[in-house]
Image 1 (cartoon, rainbow, N blue to C red):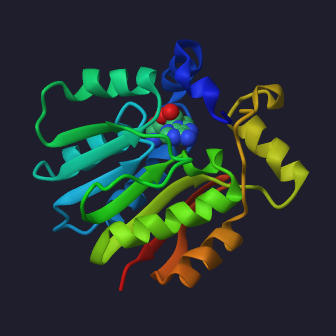
Image 2 (cartoon, rainbow, N blue to C red):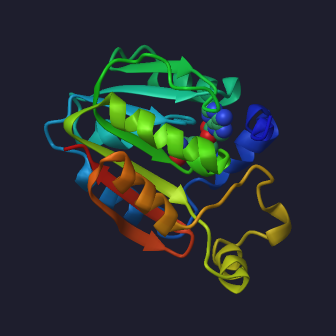
Length: 209
Ligand SMILES: C[S@@+](CC[C@H](N)C(=O)[O-])C[C@H]1O[C@@H](n2cnc3c(N)ncnc32)[C@H](O)[C@@H]1O
């Protein structure tokens, strides 16, 4: 399984301990929040981890109902710890290499630093599944780890996040922004663009007509 390390306590703990340290992360997350419609009632978080994005959304608009999916029991346990018995949040175990389960319809589908773990072909089919799950006017927002155009910039990113390149995640399957934006347009999203970017961190957004 390509992302197997996410099922281990060590890998998950290391990521979560550092989660607030990525430079500019909160800027990108802030832009993502701005583009989730104010009247969104139901949001899907693909690869929710410990529920970080859902928690940010709830802090911004407490009435929102969230569904978080992830395949890691370790991460899902952390999400359960975060949300407790909060009835506004549903957590679903699911391996994203498989088609999304029937989860109903959403006003927004969001994701943060997850889809780059999937093979390119699966990234594209997952984007199409997200499109199908959205209500008209719904927003897909993928805050993502994307490929640098050159190896020098790739090394510069790791230096900037203070991570030795040797610690590069073996499950990373980084892809450039433009290919992913083209896919979103081909799938039928409107207003597709990269709404925010810093080195290898990018916010890719599309709106369902
Ligand atoms: C870098 S973490 C991001 C977690 C969270 N979205 C955040 O922003 O903190 C990557 C997440 O993707 C999940 N993931 C990776 N591969 C997956 C797969 N094939 N199916 C489901 N979840 C997967 C991991 O379990 C982990 O929670």
